[in-house]
Image (cartoon, rainbow, N blue to C red; front, side, top):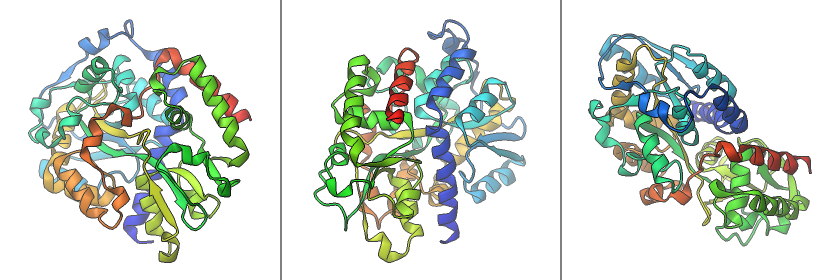
Length: 389
């Protein structure tokens, strides 16, 4: 394994653990610290950051190994400041620090949590005109599609996203020497008897239930009791073929346990790069017609930030084309800017299935959408039943 591959693996493990490790706990925590009526007063009252100017050192709070050290060092040298880079690895840890008004100047947060966080009064609004290189951001992310077809919610989210960061899609990976007849649908998880005992689902509530609901033709954001009952029935149909619920990382792929499993495209890319060449050839990957279940991390400035001007300078630094290219080559994720997507296409040229048609970003059906507070307990109850067997 080369040094770059090792770094990619570390970054992805930390990122997925945060993103999918505790969606329910995060929702309950946010409900406890929300200010106002939770319906939007705090959005209008939130402080706006309107100047990109150095006002102190930068306290950066994100995933481990998530930025190019060269780009970070360049920022420190150019502006004569220090970056105090600290890490989180779980949802509870990140939310607890945000809720406790820790002096965090800039963080990266998952797309499906942006609006609830903003509504809880934990984020500052951003004047995007103050970011010189904001024009690099792809048009589909100026008003980000993170809340599905709820255009009002997307508009309300936009002021709190300083800029998008890494994004990724969910697909299915399979052993081509063991599994035949894949069709490009989540149905394939149910229709491969040769993979009985070697088929896995993720031990992660939101993406796993979303996969099942999308396969049934339902919008997860709208799923109620009846849809969840059908999802439970679909899981019972699959259960005899299940080898179990696995971690979101690629351990089961690497150790040979899985022949058929959901996977993030970028995670499979990292796993393949770490395998001997003869093993790489055994694996194939597909995105699925029902949804790619995209999510994206985002730069956000917490309400407790003491150096918001420096934070905006950092966002602008990361958006500059030369820095963006270096960073994409380091982290291995697509970043939805003009230069970010160009660099990602070059990086993954040997893996056509990793290429992304940018038009997909504007399709709200392709996104992992938030679970509303009034549906969260239903999701948790359904998940507990699924896991209990």
